Image 1 (cartoon, rainbow, N blue to C red):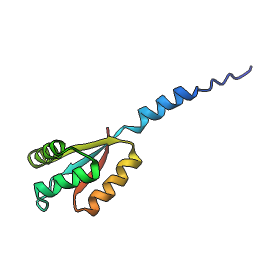
Image 2: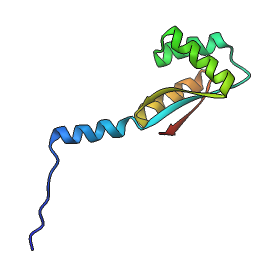
Image 3: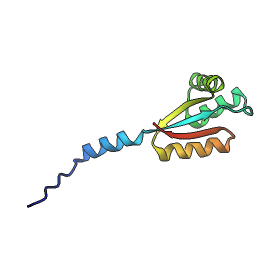
Image 4: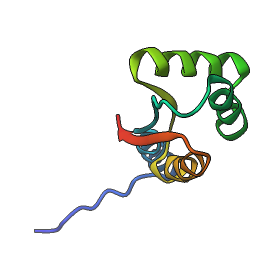
Length: 96
């Protein structure tokens, strides 16, 4: 009996990569060390947030203890996490 192998088209493969590439979230955790202003400046410069986004994330983190700050591919988020940790923020990467 012959085995039939169906190959995915390039377009189908790209769809799979797109779906799998954004299954992680970078989460900012509250701390008692960094000021709102510092957190906001850091989110604007590193995560490319607008000032309004950064302010909202800082407030949510302060009142709820954590806030999702970026969704993306695992490798991308791990690199941003490393930079934010070097800046003194507490962040984690979680699977969605």
